[in-house]
Amino acid sequence: MRGMQDHVAIVTGASRGIGRAIALELASWGVKVVVNYQSSAAKAEAVVAEIQAAGGVAMAIQADVTDQQSVETMVTQTLAEWGTIQILINNAGITRDNLFQRLKDDEWDEVIKADLTSAFLCTQAVLPAMRANRYGRIVSIASLAGLAGNVGQTNYAAAKMGLVGFSKAVAREVTSDGIVVNVVAPGYIDTDFIDHIPQWLRTWALDVIPLKRFGKVEEVAPAVAFLASPAASYIIGHVLTIDGGWVMP
Ligand code: NAP
Image (cartoon, rainbow, N blue to C red; front, side, top):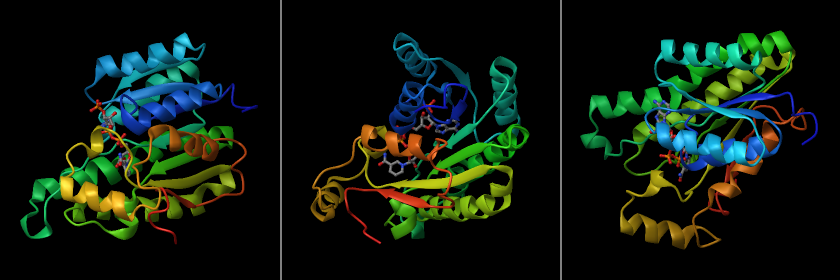
């Protein structure tokens, strides 16, 4: 898209899956991309290499998005290298599924930290740079599991629905600074993330999804890139579901 050549994006959890696809998509729109990862260094470097081979600009930065110091260092490194940040994609996330009766404290805490606190930390860390530009785009990746609830995912659903409320509240505080905040809530998308889901759930989901298949990462990334673009100037606090028609509000 025109007007994005000078833009810099941080995509959290971009070594694999949806984040990787978002990083590739944004780079193809001319954006310089930070490919954040936690432990998959080789995969993150492969994403950077793929972007560079296509003529784009990217760098990999290791940072645990649940750790404030780590997040601040990532933002400082980005600013030191490219001097500005226009886009934050809060994508990194995990699941620790268990039936609520059996859910352990650490399963609750880890998911809340990785799927919700991470967005708080990253958003707070990038806002000064966005405010300085009087421009910004923040897109957080929630989940249909948050909007609709899901058996065995009380921790994940709480974190993802929390992300929706968080995004709407932040959106109200920062629009006057030219910063736009939105949410994308995918249904089942074919990544490592859903490898572990039991066969009965897979069969059930494929039956209730009108398209009768799981989504592809390439069916999520362009919508995220649009919400991260200047064109999304009058879409505020929106939750865009990308789910093959599974939940039609
Ligand atoms: P994925 O393939 O498992 O990839 C997860 C990514 O998050 C990896 O890059 C991982 O880095 C990174 N990550 C995890 N914890 C991190 C941390 N503490 N700090 C930094 N990075 C961290 O997952 P995905 O399917 O692409 O999901 C991406 C997002 O979409 C998640 O927020 C997920 O909740 C959401 N989502 C997914 C689906 C789906 O069906 N796939 C549906 C709805 C929503 P490493 O590679 O270094 O571990």
